[in-house]
Amino acid sequence: MTDLALVFPGQGSQFSGMGRRWFESESSVRERFAQASDLVGYSLADLCFTESPAELTRSRHAQMSLLVLSFAMYEVLGRDRQLPVSYLAGHSLGEITALLAAGAVGFEDAVRLVKVRGEAMESCTAAADTGMIAALRMPVAEVERCVEEFNSGGRTVQVSNYNAERQTVLSGTLADLQGITTLLEDRGGRVATLNVAGAFHSVFMADAVPAYVAEIEKIEFTRPGVPVCSTVTGRLYESAQEIRDALAVQLTSPVRWDAVVSTLTARGVTLWIEVGPKNVLTRMITGAGAVAHSLDEDTDGAHKALERAIEERRNRPGLVGLCLGAAAATRNRNFDDDEYAAGVITPYRRLQQLSSTEEDELTGEQRREALDLLRGIMRTKGVPEAEQQERIASILRRAGDTELFVPIRATGS
Image (cartoon, helix red, strand yellow):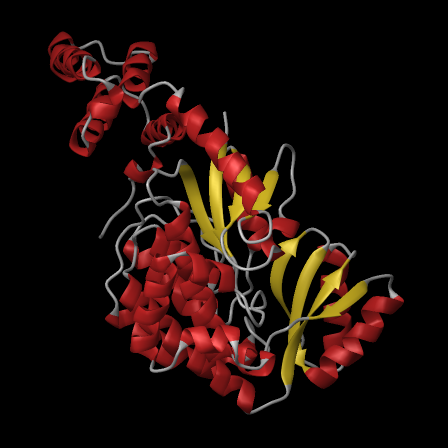
């Protein structure tokens, strides 16, 4: 069984000319570019296709272009078919793209939020010469020891991205980054300078937080229709308030991409498709059985893998059938005959009625009813809430209906 995660890149994946073939071949991409251009007051097409690399690398421009292009590519990917997506995630800025794709925020609100985000972060980079480097081929623990040793002299270098076991990103002043580069290389590591304009995800972004948080508070977020994994906590979002809380600290907190990959791998994800320019995330995804494709750089491979996942979904057991099987297989811990009749027998009969409808003809309301009926049966039989949650999540993954994901503990919108 293949569980699919779509992932969206962050700042650093931009390059001059990115998205040109998508823009030229897809009217929906041109429409998104035009819509965003009207909102921000400049031409995104000119920015991506004719402006200098230095202009595109500016935080306000790189973030906006990545958001719009990645989301437009996602819309093309899902046109005329239902994507069998189990989870969504994004690296730093890409997390906002993931929330947009999951329906947790609207397009115009996402554009406004990223406009403020990019401008605020860029203002922080104007005051100091700062940047980011990648520490490669060195275990995370060893990098952290080097950072601690280097900072003992009164310097301020931070681990800002935990990308993989042997890939971390450090933020700091250019002078300090040059100094720690020497230390890391002396210890056997390899260092690469990143194509970004400042020391993101560090204390150097503190002045950007007030304006960004003020904009977050203006936006109406909703619970994602498809589970989204947070790069701040490494956990799935369970409420709109959790989204606000995580985004509010995102600028000064490290990106825990390693935790995202670990969490989603543990939940059964084996197929990853990166939606956006380049293949930065594709190269960072590893693990037993993991298959990763970049939609931009391996379009044919991504589409073939997606078609296989769609075909597999068609052959998966239906949601109602899985609910019936789970209801019958659940051990009973309640021996009150009246409660059992009302809470188990009656809802089970209703599940049987729903099972007479063809799976592809079931409405969203009927699918949610089936899940509610199963929850009621498990509750009556005395199944603990944590176990109920785990079984429901498993059924949704097997049926490919993760858009119906509603955590039991969730509160708020």
